Image (tube, rainbow, N blue to C red; front, side, top):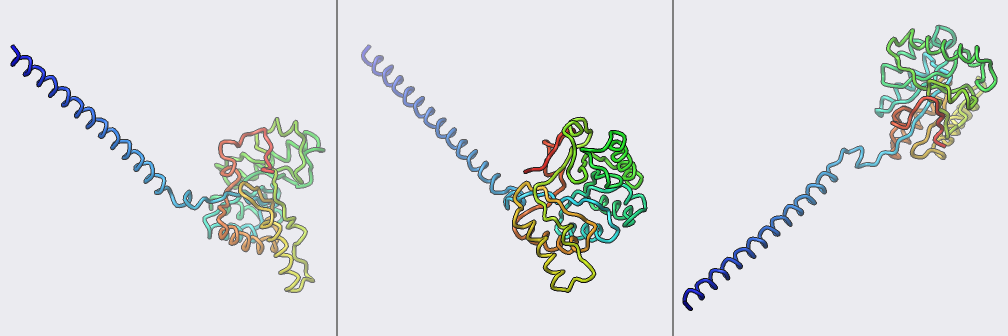
Length: 268
């Protein structure tokens, strides 16, 4: 009888030790899985795309009053050097074969991946003062002029002339109304026939400084693609933005899912 009891006790001790050993092994295995999960997460983070790893800062450069057959195309070519894109707010009667012969420049900008928005048809109406009839005509005729050149254009943005528009018209608009928060006032520094080389260079540097001293991540920059001085300045601005780690994108890319019709944006 005592022998049976001893055998039974021995078996119980053996089973107990076996179960404890299995439990420890199971915990060790789970800990290994946790370690692997941490390693996998770390590897995924460190192998992020290069653009994310570099922490690119996004800004939008916008151009009003064109398109211009020479300067718009030159600006588009400069953007393309860096893989950048911009948004062009165009004047309808400059697309329709009037001043600046802009239709080919409009098509060129669009085909290179740039965004097209509405500025106005005549550039003479302020949207906080004009009649409803004039307001509707300015927008509809500009969109029509765009679509006469770019059949599948999806026009979603509008910039009011001078930035002037009533809150009621913003709210009722089918477009997103885009203002700005960096303005180098490049139109003030266009070349004149009497400029010396030194004076012209100073004008360009003033435009460049007006951008670079005020730009930050998320900025919307206002410029005008109808001036040679602006085109010259853009060449320098894009190079400096690139060197400082900025990426120039369209307004819609900058705003992303936040962009909506009937709202006004300035990023200010």
